[in-house]
Length: 261
Image: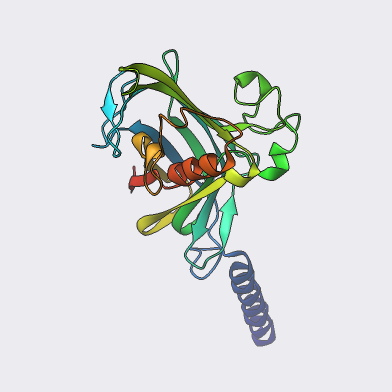
C-alpha cells in the first residue's frame, strides 16, 4: 500500500509539472508573462473640423490661416494600412486596410471599427492615400478600393488620395472662384502617427474609442502656405505644389482623445 501511495504522489507531481509547463508555453491561466489572447474592438471617429475643432459645415465661408475666404463642397480621402504599435515597438497591421472617408452633401462617412489582437499598445499609425503596391494598378482591389467610387483617375494610373473642392474669394475678380485639390501619386502617400496619452491594454472583448480630427483648413497652410489665386487647381501637378499640399494634410490629423468605453 505504501508503494502504491508513493507511486500516486510521483505521478501527480509529474502531471502538475506538465500542466505548469503548458501554461508557461501558451500563456495560459491569467496570462501573466504570456501572450494575451482574444481581440478588442476600436471604434474610429474621424471628423472633419474647422479651426475651433468644431464640425465643418459644407458651403460655409471660413477664413484660412493665410487669410483666404473659402468654402468646401466636399472632402473625400482614403485611410489605409491601419497599424497599432505595442509598447515594445512591435506592431500589428490590419490586412486589406483601405477605407474611404467622406463628407459630401449626400453622404457623411466618419466612423468605422477595427478588431485588434489583445496586447499593450502605445500609438496608432495609418496612411492617407493608397500605398504604391496597390496604387500601381487600380485593378488590384482590396478593402473598399473601387474604381467606381470616383477616387481614381481615368487618364492616369492610380488613385486620388485626397479630393477636396470648393470656392474661394478671388480679390482680382472680386468674386468667388472654384478651387480643386485632387491629390495623389506615390510621392504624396503620407503616414500619420498618433500617440496615445498613455499605454492602453487591450483585453479580450474590450472596446475603445479613437476620436481623430482632420483640421480641414490646414490643407492651405501648416507647414506650407498655399496660393489659391496662383494655383486654384492641383491634380497630378505642379509637383512642387501638390507635394506642399500633401505635407499639409499629413500634419492635419490629430488624436482628440482615445478612451476605453
